[in-house]
Figure 1 (cartoon, each protein chain N blue to C red):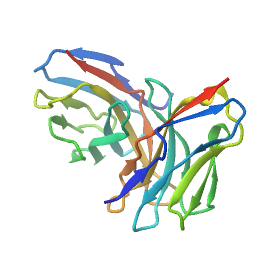
Figure 2: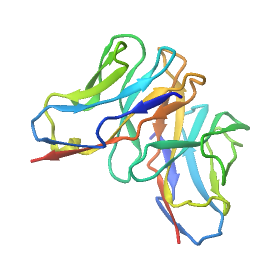
Figure 3: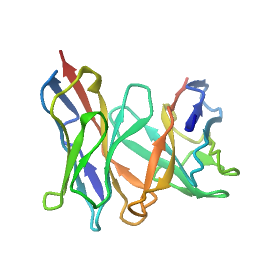
Length: 116
Length: 114
């Protein structure tokens, strides 16, 4: 099955600990994204990567870090510097539309992080 | 600044009634527009997309949306609501300066009353 997997589904961590969220895709997409979703809000972009070994900050990158060593993988680390890390985290991959330059994004099932 | 607004954070309809979810956007360049659906504790699934071809776009599960440039709108409709349509719906627009990214609206939660 082609798709995007995120693990774990639920994650609990103590305050002050770093935690890494996994995102893997076998769709052969170049672009990958990390979003944060809070109740009643839309998705906010944390980081994105257009190609292996390259990534850019999104709108809320502070307190987060990423790596893109392989095309298939785009892990997100939530560091202790992130002041309010409890949220639902969504990973996506993107491929260009046939009709234009925009990427169509495909989403994973998400990881719900709770910091105690 | 570029933005997406969705009028009504929560919409309730009766089963079998028309579904209308509103989306307005701001963009100084021709936009690409998307509607996504999210079921509880799941990722987002693409319902439909506008890519400057036909202004009336048909998607999955009986949904469609009409692009109206003069109104800067891309409202989502479905003639007859089904219980399984209860979910969160997000409208998104391509970012003006970077087509690699999209901007999401705040979402509309749809409830379907039996």
